[in-house]
Amino acid sequence: MEKREEIYKGKAKSVFRTDDPDLFVMHYRNDTSAFDGKKVEKLTDKGRVNNLFNAFIMEKLGTAGIRSHFVRLLSDTDSLVHRLDMIPVECVVRNLAAGSICRRYAVIEGTELNPPTFEFFLKNDALHDPMINDYHIISFGWATAAQIVAMKELSFRVNAVLKQLFADAGLLLVDYKLEFGMHKGELLLGDEFSPDGCRIWDATTRKKMDKDRFRQDLGSVIESYKEVGARLGMKFD
Image (cartoon, rainbow, N blue to C red):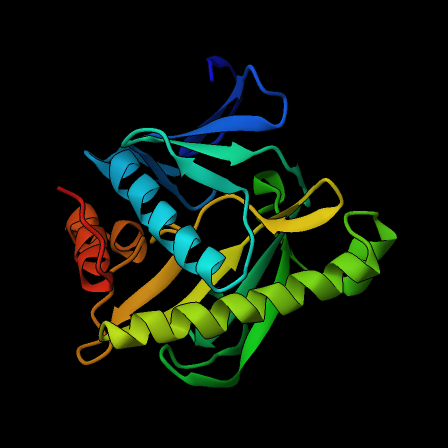
């Protein structure tokens, strides 16, 4: 398989074509951003850590019967993935209150949400990823009613698998976002699952161990990512 030209450059990853039109190479960079790109830094080793973290999680989900675009690791910073026609919405599941839901509804951070909440957001930095609902998605043609049902169902299946996985490691999976796309008529989990796109706290101390360490200038960002991975059973060295 030959890695060819870059076709997409996001805030933290790049996508390259290959000699197979059905397969892309996803390259994880050290770039880190927050607040719709207003805060940007390069964090040493971030690309490698997130690539390996994502591969571990996608393999766990695959074992549980949840299919994704992930095919296999190619290197420390590259993964082979299926080409997807991405749906431009983010699916957010919240087990505990943190971040924007606290600001929107004056909820105390750390409040348990029972049952967990589900929210859709439009994936659009220029518009600051506004919250949307099923009617917006269908009316604007971003996804079909059947795809909406499938995204919700898969998001909660992911929650059942990962919430327990993190709990077994003494960690709280506070919230996370997922993205989906279509591949040969099947809805697959796309993008990545890493501490960049979820909130993870120590179950005892509630120490933040995710991208909020970067957002809130708490320091030890990548060290915390590695600690989470190690507690889940990952090997980075």
